[in-house]
Amino acid sequence: MFECFLTRILQRKALRKVVHPHNGVYIPLESARRIGFVANADNPGSVKAVGTITMEMQKRRMEFMGIYLDFRKNPGEEQASISNPSVRTVRRNDVNWYGLPYDNAIKDFVQNHFDILIDLTQDKRVFAADYILAKADASFRIGVSNGSKNPYDMIVSSPDGQQTGNPDQLVKSILLYLTTIHTDSK
Image 1 (tube, one colour):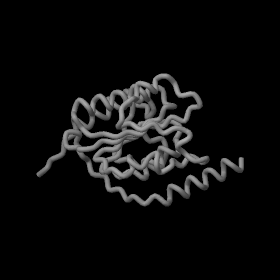
Image 2 (tube, helix red, strand yellow; image 1 turned 135 degrees about the vertical axis):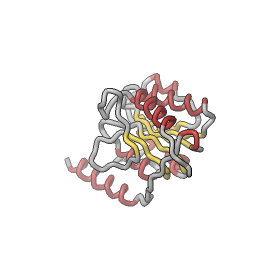
Image 3 (cartoon, rainbow, N blue to C red; image 1 turned 90 degrees about the horizontal axis):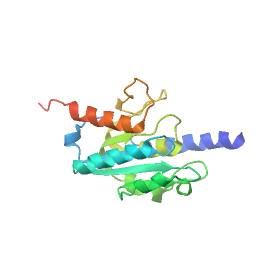
């Protein structure tokens, strides 16, 4: 009980230290130069979602970076399918005892500016994901929100209207929205 209480206090303190003002600016997919994403291995279908987004970005010849959070005791064999040098896997030994990622684990990701940042974590919130997303510099943030405090510029739901769904289906929906929504540049 005490450890859980202390953990939440330290996590809130770490998030308050992150000072990254965000003013959402929509950037269409064809105008984006760099895309970032964060995914969680605990969500079924997240490996397929990471594969879909990396394949789509490579097909479009867009620069991208990703963080794949895998805090499971026994990472599955599907981990081999995420063998892209632009996707960094953050494991249990890359975070301290209360879930704060070490700087060397996320440094490359948070030092870059992303035109579009996609949060593929959903259901139960993971502090490491919240911290990385708060530290990342992005023009436009997309995610699935379950809480009252919403850090996103665009919220995507699964096709059946639920805010939680298959991460791969959410990636496909996000890519569809980003390619069909256009802004007037006049």
